[in-house]
Length: 120
Image (cartoon, rainbow, N blue to C red; front, side, top):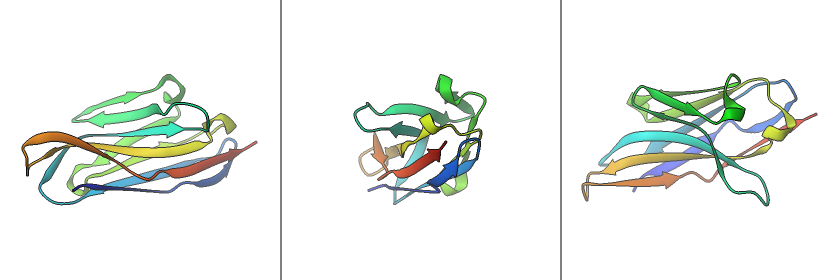
């Protein structure tokens, strides 16, 4: 079983920055991709950014302001968020996609989420 734990959320003023961290831990797995998603009440969860191998992908609202990076040795992904806006307020969730070597098949795990609140 792979556990995913996020940290780094909090309250920040508009224009400020936050850095989110997410670590995947467990046994007999190999991470293939990690991503950050976010969700606000009444809305569907949306992709913020993802990283797989040497490739990154960003939602339009994240381009130029957010940066995703990964420490592959630690199975840890980061999301540096700059120039934050009140509309970035959401619960941010980490997703890890991996190969489960117990069953030799792909799988994924989600974290519990971390709240990011941006005040105006």
